[in-house]
Image (cartoon, rainbow, N blue to C red; front, side):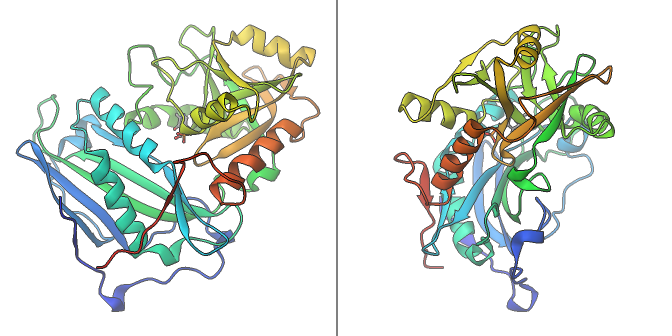
Length: 362
Ligand SMILES: Cc1ncc(COP(=O)(O)O)c(C=O)c1O
């Protein structure tokens, strides 16, 4: 499909900020957005247009029954000045997996990738140069049919917007986070939508997230609905590290999002670069491991949060458990350096992980 351009008038174009360190996460925008619409059973009118408000009918199904999904990827400025996206094809594939779960129409991966590459090319000056800063790529899709019956919409809109960003957690990698282990809030249940990046999953987790923050924790470490197994750390997959340096990631179930970061870590392990595996992790074994010192490091994996070390876990009764000595462990640090080095071109990345943004004729 041809992608048409409708460029931002020069007088309305924003300029990138000089120093991205104070950008925060997700607040800044670039000048353009990629949009495609699904009508009459097909994706059509793919276009790059100025970033501006949409006109959507108040009765559009996304507003009422939450038929919305999204993705989150990243692009980085390398030392030679070129901009590279990190595994964006995996985001495009997972968006389609989520679409199937939410009864929404998949959109060809090639169209998602070309739309992103052209958009990123156009707004490439916004890609930060500073450490821990990147372009956060936000693809999303929502139901646009003006109808109030509870059924899948027949019309949809798909978009990609870009946000020049700093680290997700203020303090970045240098500050270990606290995680609240909750037995009263659950993110997802088996047979639900936990393995989709559905907007509704995040709406459902706001209350628990606020409670965690009120206890001084950055995220909730969710258990499965029977409070038996470890599931996810809020917007991250969870990991812990055993005394022998092995990273253990909870096995993917249909209530856990298949993190691209976790999958990348497991691929690095398969290539012999680190030790990592997946297991179904009993909550009681995890607590015992923290207390006995068998577990020496822990934290979360995710595109936005990258590799976030957890220094402390807090239970709902206020009991706090420190991981190791509470500081960033050497295995977590080494993995962080290897992984971010691959993203930023300082270390060689496996074949196909980096996508150089081409210069297109407009
Ligand atoms: C619920 C949840 N789990 C895990 C992750 C981490 O996934 P990824 O590494 O693909 O960003 C995210 C963020 O995308 C998330 O929202």
